[in-house]
Amino acid sequence: MATTVECMTTIFNALRSIGFQRGPRRLVAGIGGGLAEKFGLDVWLVRVLLLVSFLLPVLGLGAYLVAWILLPWQDGRIPLERAVARASARS
Image 1 (cartoon, one colour):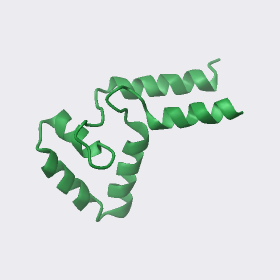
Image 2 (cartoon, one colour):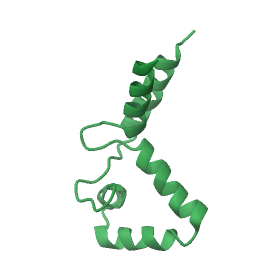
Image 3 (cartoon, helix red, strand yellow):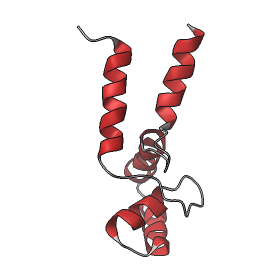
Image 4 (cartoon, one colour):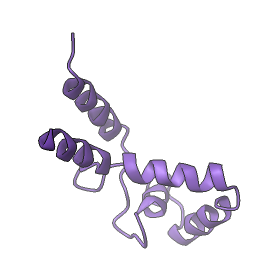
């Protein structure tokens, strides 16, 4: 039976394998830059669309926060993975 750490590692590796990373051209978290890069769109267009999506609080802001926590940076680091590692190191 797999341990919790092994399961989390599998999840984080799967997130890295989807091919989406936060963009290097970031204002806040790089989500807009990453989307623009992935789909070949203008980064400012994507940023405006993200801001418009915030008018739908649960969908827009909620999805942005989930993306912020789960999507890897350019170097492959995932914020949630680091938080889980710190929490398990304290235990």
